[in-house]
Amino acid sequence: MSGEMHNNIVILISGGGSNMAALVEASRRQHWARRFGARVVAVISNKAEAGGLAWAREQGLATAVVDHKALASREAFDAQLMQEIDRHAPALVVLAGFMRILTPGFVAHYEGRLVNIHPSLLPAFPGLKTHERAIEMGCRFAGATVHRVTAELDHGAILEQAVVPVLPGDTPEALAARVLTQEHVIYPRAVETLLAGLSAT
Image (cartoon, rainbow, N blue to C red):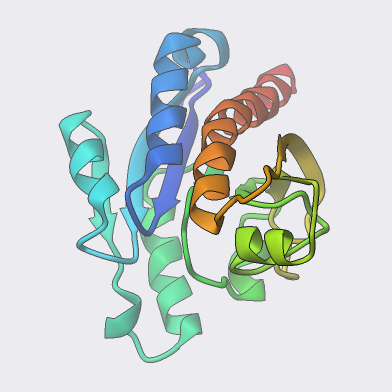
């Protein structure tokens, strides 16, 4: 890399990539390239059929698929995924609906550069079926959390949170849809804060 700063961002997805799209659009709207020398350079998925890949290609972003089913172990998958990510020399690796549990070796490789968004108010409801569990427990509030990724699932330092009320008669699907609108707000904000920190060092 030259003397000019390049804070490349690589986004990992497994599905439709709505948080990925929110990040890409925010990067353009907020002029991250000019302000932080930052841009989203690649979108990588573990599923060839992930809907977000087509959108990313339409935006002119590099895309790649590392199929976890084609590899013998989590370690083999993570090794190949790291190889694909590292081609882009990322300052940040952003998990946006990436539905794979990553090995400690992978997490250590990107220590300080790896962030995730989780659809609950962590530390409540790590893991899956967060909205269903929040409703079953009678929670008055749900939400979303942007956090640093550590080897322990959904336990890294919290960077941003959004609170969403649980309404009477809520279904997991209805609650998820309302939480998702807030995810699209807080994820770009958290990444922007991280980029500001990187460009200040």
